[in-house]
Image (cartoon, rainbow, N blue to C red; front, side):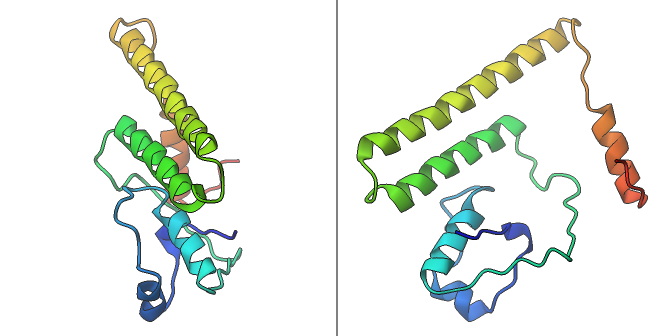
Length: 144
């Protein structure tokens, strides 16, 4: 099913409200996937123009990266439960949710270990390359 980022889509206000708008139970992520699915099921058409470029520079949330990952995980679990619970066996949905949360737990452990290693002075924080690429993009240069 076609899906586009909620960071950049346009549609008539009436169409937005006809499918109930964005589901506010989602936080930061997956709400656009949910909306696109509901919009398409209601007969709406989703178009993508590859000639339009949008640059998402910087984060828009002050939430911690771990909290954002938790919200992504919760959003994905909610999405699959909302749209596939009746069409698929319940144990499959539970297994999927468990796998999503297990992945989140591994990510959280990895970040905690990295933080501990940095605090102990055993590893330096990275990110200089990403900052350099972002500055180059802002200056209009291609870094690849």
